[in-house]
Length: 332
Image 1 (tube, rainbow, N blue to C red):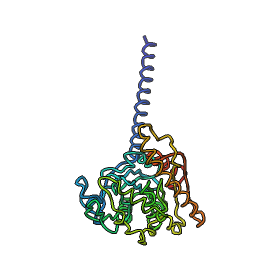
Image 2: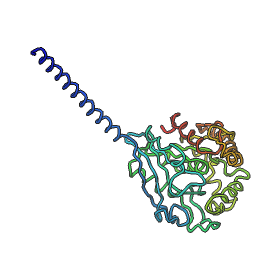
Image 3: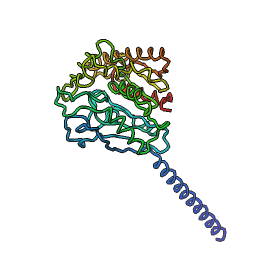
Image 4: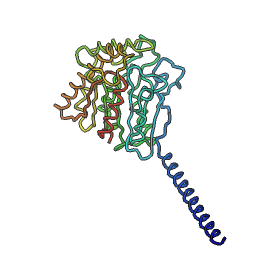
């Protein structure tokens, strides 16, 4: 009996030790999990002044706060930089296309905070000369003011990570050239700029006509391109042409990506018609302009981080370009 009792005590001590070890491990795990959660990227939405635009630059869209621009963001403590992502020609007014169509928000889990201003369809993210009279726009677009004079100061005041007090800016299609233009014109605000399938030689023969036709096809109603930078002979066209601003990009990190127009991994059978008759020609034009831009930048001594692969004008390829830039250290 004594032996049995001794064994029972020993077993009890071992059980107690195991329980203590398990509880300790659980406590440590809880601490680790809690620490992981506190360092995870957090999503938030905030609003900035619209520089006089009635609502996100649209036509009194009642779903938006009057006179305010919605901004989506993802950030994490300890991240080393922040990128502003500009949308394309058909940008929506409730969520950024980047948020709807890509995993761009996940950049915030790997070092780069993400900021997405919402809205700006057909705007080229610039200050327009006048309201678009084709669709009854109530007030002219002032996206140049919104991005540079409202969004960037808001990011600084909210403590978003930055490099030398500057941010990265990147856009797709319409937003691609706009990102390079913003960065070239305001070197005090941006240290890196990227264009994904953007149109980078707006002064090239035929480009104004091409943009005119493209903007007539943007919902909910056609836009008048002459209200943006004036008639074709206006100096504002060259002042907002990335190709003509290369000499102001020395010291700026520049990324230019474009597909070659051929079908690739993100071209699906149900989208064949649109991909073939819209996506392919649009991307071939972007590809040609990207190569012209890169050649001119080389001549002027401006290094360009370039990317090209099979692909048309589609979100999957822009997501790949974004991560290619990240993995190559573009945001560092």
